[in-house]
Amino acid sequence: MANSKYEYVKTFEQTTTLLPNTYIVVRVDGRGFHKFSTKHDFEKPNDRAALDLMNAAAAAVMKELPDISFAYGISDEFSFIFERSSRLFDRRESKILTTVVSTFTAYYLHLWSTFVPSKPLTPLLPSFDGRVVLYPSTQTMRDYMSWRQVDCHINNLYNTTFWALVQRGGMDVTKAEEKLKGTLAADKNEILFSQFGINYNNEPEIYRKGSIIFCDVSYPYHQEVPDPAALAVSKNSEVEISKTQKEKERKRRSKAEIVVQHTDIIKDDFWEQRPWLLC
Ligand code: ATP
Ligand code: ATP
Ligand code: MG
Ligand code: MG
Ligand code: MG
Ligand code: MG
Image (cartoon, rainbow, N blue to C red; front, top):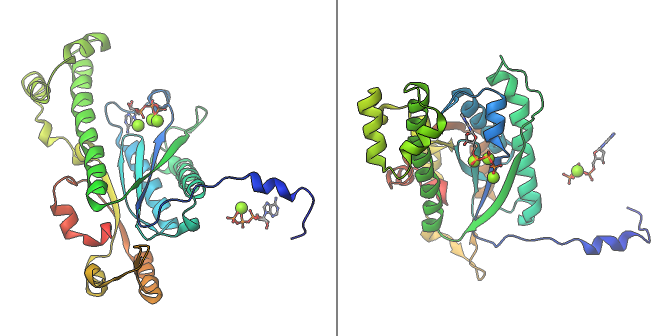
């Protein structure tokens, strides 16, 4: 490329490089989706097609960016978790963040007509914001996931009860809000059961637990995954996995099926059964 006298302006650019050997989390969230969901007639409290669309857009992002090991989605948000050793875009924050957000948005738009064929998408159009958070340990990473899933539970129990009062109990929204003010989980469960015959635990898992998406590489992967204790740890404490090993992993992953589950990710079971997700 030819140099020009203007080239110096490039030195004004600032980049943030994300700390090595930390889990990178990119969380995207729909902008003004309260309004967006009203404008596009989402079913309340949970529009299943809209959730399936979020999941499909997230899976597409994971296909395009194989350094993402898993993703967790609720409502209008999705968290994408990168493997600790990822060197995507030399760990430049703005490249990673903007690529995830725009790829997600592009697929959300592209897949809209597949998931919501009866409602053509016209402005108000969907857009998403995003942020990057780094987690330095498996414990903090697990706690982040637990935080999001607890949020899913709290919001969904509230929304399920609120909309039952409005849609089936004939209350207006202000009355329903008042009735739920200060109530505990047990109170909401009781309202659902005694007034509407709803056992909250029988509500669909996708609503109660959210959606976790990952590559199901379990069986063959297990045999070749290196024992973490046996991995060399270099001076800057980055785990070194040989290039061929990395390449093998990548190939296996690109062939592996992407699965969507609605399961508990707070307890240990899920993670113990899939140790490769948090490596
Ligand atoms: P912000 O721009 O600050 O994120 P927001 O209106 O998007 O504002 P959120 O806290 O992100 O606020 O809440 C998202 C809202 O979108 C929910 O409260 C709910 O009303 C609506 N929503 C999202 N997904 C669904 C869905 N699948 N079914 C029904 N409503 C949904
Ligand atoms: P990166 O992801 O690093 O940005 P890139 O392939 O997008 O990689 P750029 O330096 O951004 O690299 O260059 C964009 C390229 O896209 C151009 O070199 C050109 O080949 C192509 N391109 C963009 N716009 C047009 C256009 N309007 N007509 C033809 N080619 C285009
Ligand atoms: Mg937001
Ligand atoms: Mg939002
Ligand atoms: Mg949200
Ligand atoms: Mg480009």
